[in-house]
Length: 101
Image (cartoon, rainbow, N blue to C red; front, side, top):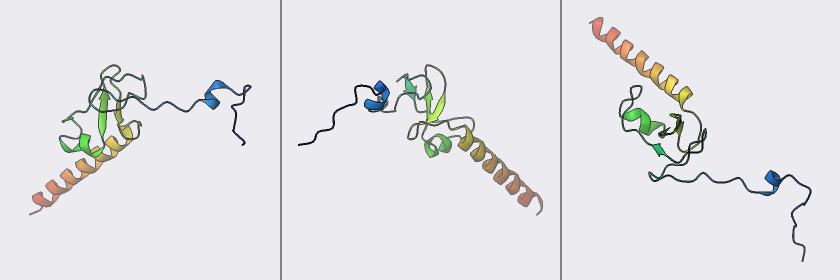
């Protein structure tokens, strides 16, 4: 019977599994920036209205104000910028088509 024993000379982080982010009272993981579990899912934002936060699983940390994707833990800044530009271009295009009639 060959059981793997931990290497006593290895760094402690190499032996310990990575901790899973704890869930807050709202069912959202902890903030990846500060580790706080005081997070909230907004229903409306200035950049995405009602649809944007749901589209990107947007979550905001109440402790540090960091906005992130609750599924990946990464910042939503890039996707928000792309979303904002696409919506702006669509609105300008709709006005251009409506104005040319």
